[in-house]
Length: 312
Image (tube, rainbow, N blue to C red; front, side, top):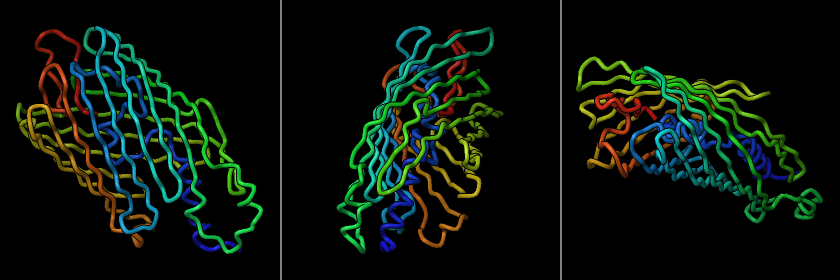
């Protein structure tokens, strides 16, 4: 019989492969483009985001995820988005690169956008990092999964205005099952719903409640309920609740006119809370061109341009 490390690592491997192609972040409302390409180009400036997460601190072989993304308008009604992601869980690694396009249609007081993105992921498994009771086990000797490239597509749609947004998307249109270490893990389509409303009551304060929900066949649905408050476009505070998992505290501030930094901490209330000290996450926003507004504000429609909310 194999040692506990083999069992645990296989469980982490299965969880990693079955996880959504879009990276899992507590602050993913700021990188909604990673799971809904319709977001691309919905702001009136270009931006780069660096997203880094260290999950389950103190837990051996816990996940570490890093994302670098770009989002910008290229023509009057078109936008492009791209990101690269690196995800490691013990001996498993998942690296990916994505490119997406979105088309925006303006109506009298709201907008609708449709987006499509492609994703190429490389899954790899380093068996040298494993410890087995029987090194001659035929399951290990005949394992086919060392490294594999898998393509995928994501489709998304979104309606948004100065005060609200609502979007839906679907990932994993190409169902590629993964095989290795004596197991076959089926690919599962993921569906996302997101929505929020801005409750600004004066020019200095803004409160934005939002929800992101994830659905997949044979897996329980998960919802993230977020509350973000901003002051003067310079300071951010918030709290999130992830069902059956964690409570998240969020703070942020504007460092310069073009740079905003946000940090969050996950406090787990699931059974895993006894085995780690929480998760840390940081996001750095860099605005490249256009009106200099805070990365979470709803922009005013002063010059009769398209509404460009900043909740993601």
